[in-house]
Image (cartoon, rainbow, N blue to C red; front, top):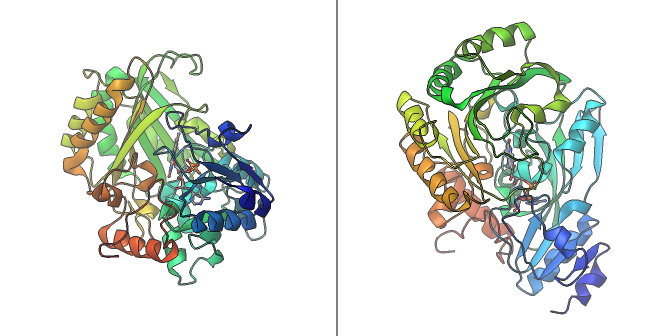
Length: 454
Ligand SMILES: Cc1cc2nc3c(=O)[nH]c(=O)nc-3n(C[C@H](O)[C@H](O)[C@H](O)COP(=O)(O)OP(=O)(O)OC[C@H]3O[C@@H](n4cnc5c(N)ncnc54)[C@H](O)[C@@H]3O)c2cc1C
């Protein structure tokens, strides 16, 4: 493949598999996904992205994108991979309360820079994911019930569509591009920069509580009941964690089976304590770390892995967490099961997440999420895919029928690829994709198939 025209057409770097630097650019946070594109472009500007997409389009090569590889759902096996890590511009405007964020910026940088002005962006469970990739999938923030999805608070996108054109899209401009970028993931274009809202959240009442896993049969039903009584701005989730005995995991959690309750609340300490009390009263915890905390320390709430790991994941949206749902989850992942999964999680949805908007976000109708993650490491690696499938089947009777694209896991056949969106949203997204990516360049990742007959 002659890449000279591409190399001459960009100010960034163009790498072939034999080049030094290629391996570092294709490496994904999910190390079980090994990307082997023909060419990697590391752009320095939006014009570089335009050049890369046009070059690929002229040769009918697929174009994929990676910032961190947290969402590396499938291996990228051909074409041009645009590695956005070099698009690292970040500007905070404290007056307008916004951040302009390049496609390669992770949440950690935004959180730290915004905190200097007492401001915060709507980050999810870990600040290690890319702001843009996360937000294009809706972006379910830690404080989602209080503020809504991250994509509800985008002001504008700079995006290169599949026809190789650069657009500036303002939220509310009435274009299909604006609609599809808010929740439609990478289906219509490659975003080079984005402007998002910031909020005055210097600190919050939040943290984590851990109990021994053997208490799950008491704690999960209590969570199901308690979580229905909470006000909209109280955000919480619960998980069953089976942590491997590795040094990266601190004592006393290393190698244990635990129940992990997560809390994020923007109200007062007094109200937080009162609202949390029923869960604290279920049983004495091993560790209780809930209290006033700076927003900059939000990674302490979920304690997601910070180092790359090989993993498989899947999730569905639940319309309720009935006693029978809890029993089904306990059957799969409770103390009497042989569950190999690292994490089985239920997040409480609702509140501002449920507010209808004209966008491509899926999951607004969910009352809870059910999500499973397994580490693809010996000796349990082979058991993980089956355990995830069984967990999803167990929750299916209470599912809305949908999922959320950021938690969907490996996209399967056409029907499975449709699941993260309500039917009409999915069909509209198909049409938008056909219009903005007529050559089907963006066919990796969670790409939606072409509309029937077109
Ligand atoms: C430990 C962990 C915790 C997580 N917690 C949350 C959470 O709390 N809430 C939540 O909503 N999600 C969460 N996620 C999911 C996460 O938001 C997605 O995996 C998201 O895709 C990560 O974006 P990325 O750019 O970092 O990943 P990448 O793997 O680099 O990109 C994933 C996909 O995002 C799209 N994409 C990325 N950049 C661009 C771009 N510039 N233009 C167009 N498309 C792009 C592409 O489709 C790409 O294939 C979590 C994931 C992990 C692994």
